[in-house]
Image 1 (tube, one colour):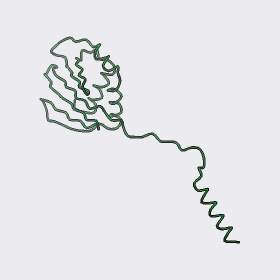
Image 2 (tube, one colour; image 1 turned 135 degrees about the vertical axis):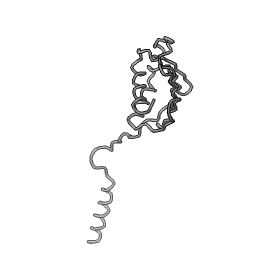
Image 3 (tube, rainbow, N blue to C red; image 1 turned 45 degrees about the vertical axis):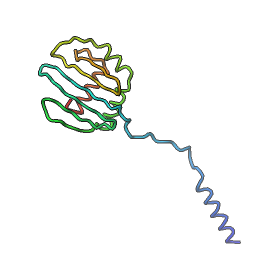
Image 4 (cartoon, rainbow, N blue to C red; image 1 turned 30 degrees about the horizontal axis):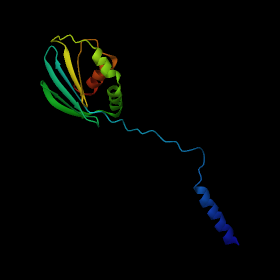
Length: 145
């Protein structure tokens, strides 16, 4: 009889082990940064005649080339990749670029931004849209661009 009681107690404990205690399980958000749309941005012109190119891969790896210095490489950190992905995915980026005036002045920086099949050209005439300014600031903070 004692064995039967122990057997029933063990079976009951086994069944309870699979029961959920507390509330439902909560999924934790992924900490992986979003994938970037690969892009290339070129800066030409300016007072000293720049010709700089920054190529960025989907994983945040970048390569910077310039006529005035050595090629350098690096990788955007997770926070920078998240910020970049947000800027590049924002539909207002194209709208802001289209609204920027083209002055054709030789001392201004001219930019050519390639995102997938889209090509955007603009000048830094001091009237940058907020997303364009954030993009250029971020690239300048994280790379030699």
